[in-house]
Length: 113
Length: 114
Image (cartoon, rainbow over all chains, first blue to last red; front, side, top):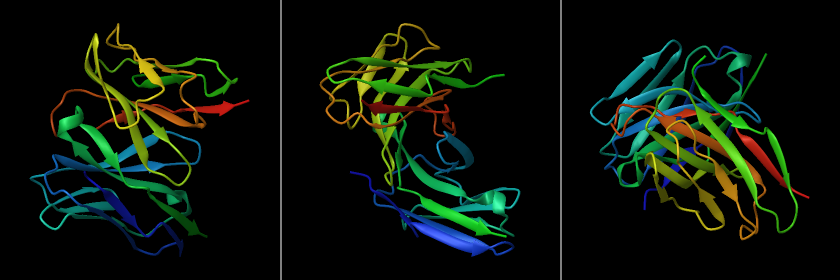
């Protein structure tokens, strides 16, 4: 069974810092990996999708990498801002369940002014 | 605007009552999903549907039922058999079953037990 783990569970940083969120998964037979953002009481917003054949994806200040063989992904946020405060969720694609997603428990990020 | 709508935003269930959560999408997506989120937990898959008139159980389907009579609609019923229904419910959809398609999520419904 695929297990997805995110470290750390919570993180507090001052504005302007660069930071890294970590995600690991136990079964390397994935089709893709996605990073989502969730604000309190809201749905999920897709940030980046990395296909299994790719090593990284970039969008603005966000960069996500994927090392499928070691079962790891990182989300790098450059020059953090208070508006980045949210929970960040990592998920891997499950081809044997209609391509549903297996989620980690998330990293709760607080960026202080 | 294209997207996924869920209603209601909040839902209260009395003991022994069945309640239905609505999920509608106008993205013309084939696949739809229901997830449950509990505090401090990742999302868990309840049911999914890859095509109209077909759906499959996910990891925690007991106490829930779904239907997929139209491509754009995938309602979830929480039955009285679900003994711990208090949670945040999220509906999602994706275009195809290909690996490069992201999932889009609705705003969620919070279910509370009276």
